Length: 124
Image (tube, rainbow, N blue to C red; front, side, top):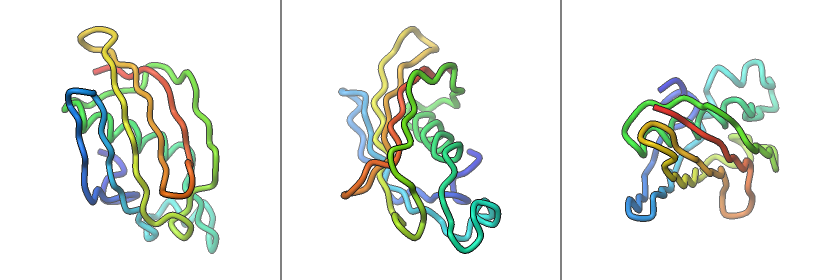
């Protein structure tokens, strides 16, 4: 995992294996070095880090490291920042295309806003 315990820390996971979904409760870590360049004094979570967070959570959920094969839709709906949303939920829903490929729908959100909405394919 590239960003776990650097960009975010997992505080808890609610899984529903039967429905193939999970909610990861995360703390966004404001001391991450990524904020030194994005942007000093006004930290904003880079979209690429949000997408990587989704990939890492999906990988943990299915128990295999996955790679993104295709992004069908990725909407950055609101600005995420450790100052604005120090805790977020990553909601993952996975369905199988075949033994090694999965359709992943995910959101990063808190109680007030959705920050990113993602749909794509990931593979083991």
